[in-house]
Image (cartoon, rainbow, N blue to C red):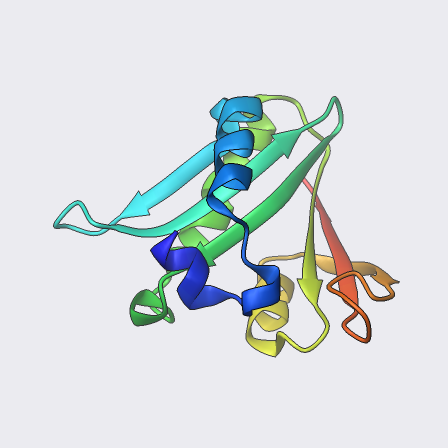
Length: 132
């Protein structure tokens, strides 16, 4: 929850019960990254359908950004999708989250479509995807 609160706008923060729901529903797709002192520095939630892996949420603690943690975590998620025979991976990102969009593009995700008001009135999202 500390990473969640430090990473997102208050209106976008998943409440603790939402995390618990995702943990119960997508237990095999709930991942964390730890630093060398075993402190959790990032998390990702991956939901898998027969042909698509959907990253429901991914966040890196602000103090650990720009150190390759997100890239490593996304590569790990892609490998998990490959293991399951999934053909594409998708995620949503705010249109104004330019650092995340640059990272996702660098890792091969491309914009698929814009989702109007996805993050609330006047806050659009971009659905990005990549073949696995």
